[in-house]
Image (cartoon, rainbow, N blue to C red; front, top):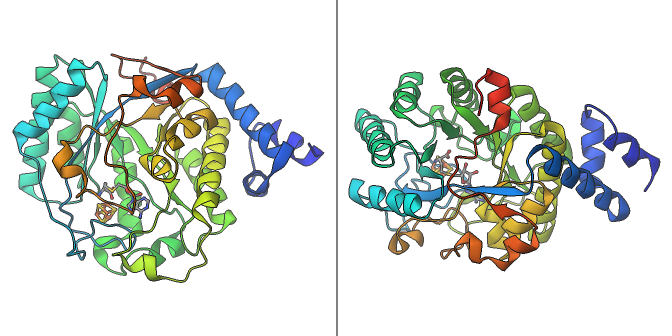
Length: 359
Ligand code: SAH
Ligand code: SF4
């Protein structure tokens, strides 16, 4: 190991140049990076992984993000929206199987009907589980009033990825109009934190036009924002999207995977006690991709519990996995040395410390 890396890993805080060096490191240095993140994970999280049963309840989206397979402009997919009953059934499955939490995710729609519906669903699920199921929402940009109503109904975590925290890069991967405003997304993230949610964000890794400097800034942004949860994953092309046809200088899919592992390890070292998701996009690249993310420092898995018949239509990117094994049956989870913590919410202890609320 050269002194540079050892020196960096021993620091209390990382500069942008430090992070870039960590992102580039190879060989013995890379081993040292992962060993450090394993040490921090063991100390602050333990060898545990928590579950959020993921219900992708609708692929109807009003937006046109240039990378996403369910963007409004993609007419090659069948649109669906689960009934309330189907959503409640999926939540009941999570409850019976002691998942501890669910995550409700969909395309982005803003309307009074959507606000009312999700508010009622959250309340129903809270009641039917006697408060046992934790609820994460990931349904995009909404007004502060809507976030507040859903929070008061019982949702306590919200995942809103910034996708790219550099405004210029953000503009390259989104249409240039008011519906895709970088500043609105940032305001929404602030509003979620102000409302009291455990607030999660993240970025895609390996985007066209993205540089190591951008990724270092992404990590510094998340640290500076004091997020409670991080959901990052590799960018994967979807053939029916404009970004798939951009010549922005792409890394190979394997390089994007490796870079994501490093991003996870670095944010674990920087933020220690936050929740970090082992994203499905990791599993899309390698079947045991999520387990490798756990080895790098992630502690959350989101097994897909959407009714099987809809899963093929929630295709954000190519090769998105449709089936999912029960986590305890996954030999690879055992290989990652982690144990699934059934029946508990697995809240971010960072949130507890940040807000003074004991988890
Ligand atoms: N509509 C909501 C939630 C659903 S999209 C929202 O946008 O916040 C969930 C996530 O899928 C997005 O945040 C994005 O980071 C990810 N995603 C979309 N297209 C992707 C692609 N081509 N490769 C990797 N991740 C993608
Ligand atoms: Fe819609 Fe989210 Fe996809 Fe953007 S990323 S098109 S908001 S589902």
